[in-house]
Image (cartoon, rainbow, N blue to C red):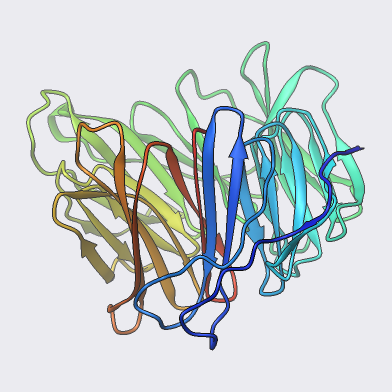
Length: 377
């Protein structure tokens, strides 16, 4: 790994209230200016606290209460000590697509053309790559303390599921059955693999490669399309739903909550205004015109919206949820609104808005923090 990023102090900006710590990171890229901030506390309005620079857009930001890590699109990775200073970084290369932090905060897992594990000092512990050309489609730290990964082979789009221990030793693996073109996968921290076909059929596969269940998402009259399936961290709950009607006519878009055996837990009503869905830990988010969060039993935990805005991203940690909204506008400069909600009271406790011409993403961080990155991506 090549060392690339020089250490330097962050620019500190006075906070309105010193009882809470916030960190703001300004990222300058070749194609545009970007910003990132992390926040916590009970202030109504958020304020910038600090900045740092790199030469490309961050595709991943993770961290603990005491330290953060950022990964750029070119494979640079560096630490943010105390969310107040930037460490010397390293360059991984390999066209990374994502990375994740272990629950202990001691290890980082980077996915791309290869799978790489680093410690919290950014020292590479091991790296794995298949013999035939492939990419890491998904990779997670498992609840048993190891690593699970799905490799997708470039030649024939076949997939291989592999588990390693934390030292990088091969544990087990299997060839994912060929379910045909257009299949999508979701990998849970339990090691459960969920495979969804364009036809609406879902397979759940155990850590040992055994098919647990096969079931189908209802589509009466075949009037809906764009099936999306997400699985929670436990691997025991799956939310599935179609994103649009084939006719293009606005209407109902039901979401179905299943367990891993294919048993339907409940059905969640949605409309074409809210076509998107994703998992947030062991909860689920449906979003579009309105953002709604549901628990593992389908109970609504939060519903939030903003007039003339669409929800585009979310994160959740330590009883708080960050929702990012974008104004519905044809202007080249978009207005974004960040709202932090208390999940118990469902109240908006923090907010911030800005106008920006570049892409915005939100990243989940522990310790009552949320981080956003703005940039050309």
